[in-house]
Structure formats: C-alpha cells, structure tokens
Image (cartoon, rainbow, N blue to C red):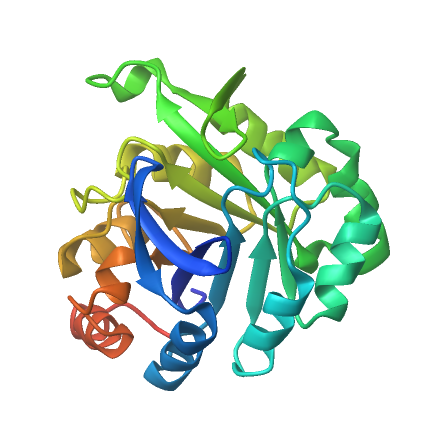
Length: 255
C-alpha cells in the first residue's frame, strides 16, 4: 500500500490566501508565501496553490507569486487556475511548480490533458474536478461537474469525467466536493469512493475537513491517496503534524 499524503491548500485571490464556504463568502487567510513556508516546516507532504478566480475572471495566473512561493518551500508544489495552453503550463512549471491542475480548461478542451502528458509527463498533469451532488440527500443520484470556480455546471457526471481524464493522460485527480467545501462537516466519502473505484491513478480528497476523524474516513472508507485541507490549517485548528500523528495512531501509513 502506498503511503498517504497530507496536502494544505492555498486558495489565492488577488495575491492573498482566502477561504470560503461552498466557494462563496471568502475571507482573508494570510500571505501565500508565509503560509507556504509554515506548512513546509510543519511537515506537509505537498502544497497546492490555486488561483481560484483566474478562470472565471479570465486572468492569467501570476507566475511571479508562484515563483516566490516555490522559492520558500522544499516540498512538491501543485499550481492551478487560469491555465489554458501548453505555454501556460510550461510557464508555471518554469516558475517552480512540480505539477499543474487543470479544471475549466480540461473540460473545455480535454485534449490539453493529453498534450500536457506527452510534453511534461502524466505525473505533472492533475485534473481538478469540482463536483456537486445531483440530489443533496442521495449519493446514488451522482454528482455534476462544475467549472469557472464552481460557477458553471457543464452537465457531465463527475465519476465518468474522472475515468475519462485518466484515459486522456491525467496522473492524478484533485476531487473537491462543492457541497462540503468549507463546512467542516467531513469529506463526501461516497463521492471519493466512487471516483477512487473508477480510476487507477491517485485521488486527492478535498472539501469538508473539520475533525481528525474526517481525514481517516477519506483515506480509508473513501479510498483517497491523499487529503487536502485549507481553513482547518490556516486558522490553527490543527497542525499538519497533529493529523499525521492521529492517522499513524490509527494504523494509516503516512509519508
């Protein structure tokens, strides 16, 4: 069994880390460079940097800010938001990212996943899927895919899209439950399990971490390879080491 990973996420808007609930009501959560340094020192396995309004606002990602963060961390850095071409991907990788995430661009032009995998390798290409339940009370109804920072539904089934993304060359799926994002009610374990069962590549569960038990559920029952969290770390409820110690204590193999 591969060791599991803990990944803090920096949702960045206009150069600042922000956090909201279900993609709305954003509040400031600090400076991305300082936050990145802190998580590196705390023992995070990776760091994810998402320019959350780049696609909806049609802005290019700020490579200079990515470079500043990359210069301060010594763990793998995944960067996403507003990447639409191979040139965009190349610029971010040159700025210091180890992997990129594609969401809106991957839906609008799925062949970009394949192009990126052929040029940079599948290990660099992460497809981010923002998913919302079709029926809030019934997971069996499935999940819809959303783009543009959760603003636009595309009518695709999230599990089917994850499987197709793998076939196109994605090396990892970053799976966010829009229903649970920022609520601290726990990951959508049914969603995570459904996608994990549909693909062979790693799945990173995102959206809803609030208690230590939630991480355990996503990694075991949900079958995730890694768990991503933001507000719970940003506002000091837990440190990365707290989560790792808890998981190791329950028999989960950690990096």
